Structures are given as C-alpha cells and as structure tokens.
Length: 311
Image 1 (cartoon, rainbow, N blue to C red):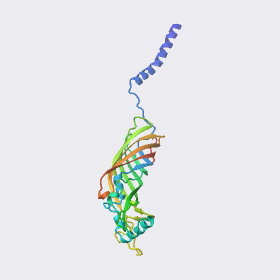
Image 2: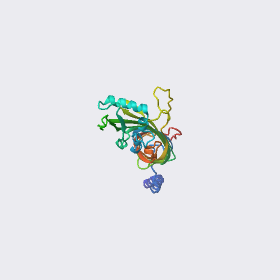
Image 3: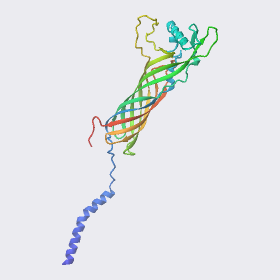
C-alpha cells in the first residue's frame, strides 16, 4: 500500500514538471531575444545649440590687405585729393622727419600677403528629424564674426629727394559670415548605448558681408568701404551716405563628424568637427575660388522635443 502511494506521488510530480521542462527546452532552442537600446529615442526631432572655434581659410582674408586687385583698396583713400592732404598732415605730425609737402605713397609689394583671420567663436543652431535608428535629415545655421589685422608701409620722399625709412601702418577688417547647411546624417547606434559616432554630409548656402575695412594712419582711420556709393568725397559738403553691401551669397558642400554622448533619453552632448568646402560672396584678389574652412563645436542636443514617442 505504501509502495503504491509513493509511486503515485512520484508520477504526479513528474507530470507537473514536464510542461516546465518542455518550455525550458523551447527557450533554449528558440532564437535569442535581441537587445533594444532604450537610452535614446530612435525617431522624432532633435533640436541643438552649440558653440566653438572657427578657423577660416586665409585665402579670403586677402580681401582685407588693401591691394588694388580687390574692389575695396588703399587707392580709394590715396586717390582722393582731400583725404590725401589729411594723410600728409597726419604723417607729418607723427614723424618729425616728414614734411607736409612730402609725397606719400605705398607699394603693392609691401602689403601683407599672408594676412589671416583671427580664430573666432562660432554659434551653431540646428534641428534634425530622425527616420529611425540610423538615418536623419538636419538643417543647421552657423554664424561667425571674423576679424583681420595687417600692416603696410608708407613710402615718402623728403624735400631733398632722399627716400627715408617707411613708417608701418595698419589695416583692420571685420566680416560677418552666416552659413546654412542642409545635411543627411547617419548615427551608428548599435555599437554602444552611451557613445554613438555620427557623420553628416550636405550642401551649404552662405552669406558674407564686410563690416569694416579701414586704414589706421597715425591717430586717424579712413574707410575703404565706399559709403558714398561712388560719389567723390568733398569736405564740408552735405553728402548722403549709403549702407553699401560688400560681399554676397555663396555655396558649397559641408560635412561633420562627432560623438553623441547620451546623458539620458532626451539629452546628449555632441563634440563635433565641422568642415566645408565653399565659395564666398567676398572676392579676394578678384577671384571666387572654393576653399576649405573648419571648426570644432560642442552641441547640446534635446531629443524628441516635438512629436515625441513614449516607450
């Protein structure tokens, strides 16, 4: 009787365990569950703001060296009789060896042919729509105010006809540069849930405007950006000044590469290298060649700002 009871209990336990064993076998033999990255939303909009350093190509900086090959140059000042007489007085006041009757001039070969833009901060704004884990389309706007500083030599001949040492004068330039980039982006999201490399490639549309181009001679400055729109300057005359735009639109291609460092599901910090090969509206040396410019920025990205998806 006891043996029969033991056998019945064993059979009951085996019957209870059999479905579990079979289910376990199914789990072992079935396809493994794939890991889904939940640290960053895959679809929706990103908005970002950033800043960094911009390195402009020195070729365009030649626009600000005063050469007669540029549309705005030192000839604009020296060819005006009244400004020329003011320059003579200013130089003779600054240098005892110069007489007010001495002839003042400059030579093209003595201009700065290696003038460069100073490194400046770039403001970066943008939005990106993500179609899935990897691909997206972004539209960004960047702004940078560039400055240059160069030198040129003043030649003058004394009343005795002897050429004496040439004083060193300065030319200052300032330029506003705006860039709009429409780019396709690719995010490598499968490698790591926290650090995600990305690349962007697209088209650039830009606009440049020369804000300042002036020669500093002695304690005074003279602008080379014609504010009278071609009219000849006459002292004491009531002359109309114009906001003449020197510069214009340009185009090119742009690219970016960086690393998305995920803070949480909605925020990331993206160190980014930005570069472009573009033609700009200013025409250094009467040319409009393509050249390479680049910058290093850090973006603060807010994810799923619009049309966010709850998961």
